[in-house]
Length: 226
Image (cartoon, rainbow, N blue to C red):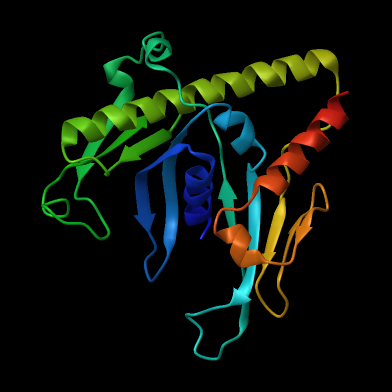
């Protein structure tokens, strides 16, 4: 539901969104997904969505129609431009590259050949995968870009920690165990717990209309840093 919400949001904003990798659940749903969004200021906008999202609904998989609560976490990292990627060199002996058969629905041999690629950076354990492209070579190139972006984000986080230790203790403004709740039962409500922004139409929000929430969080951040 979150994956659809963000891809629909990207469409509404005129951004380009592409799903790079999806790991399906054992029984239903999605375990994890990686997607790329391209557009002006898109990283700054999506950074306001980073955190844990809570969903409350009558589960369609429960025969007794009981209310269930589930959680999903969104991580947002900037994708490096081609020129910047060349600056990151990873020794081949630090990589483990696995190929496997693409999972989930698909056609045109996508599920009958070992074209999906998973790359593991051995020293850090960071993993990137792609199964969306038609060829193993294309999947490998996309997975490598994602891996480099994740390594760059790790380095960026290290630098931020070092700066924080120099400045002293500072409250985090974009991390929390639960940033927003989407309640579909017994009442209808979406509430952002950082800004107290609310909307009584969760279907509209889950269809990608999240602008008021991202803008409210960005205003809160600006006020907190001033």
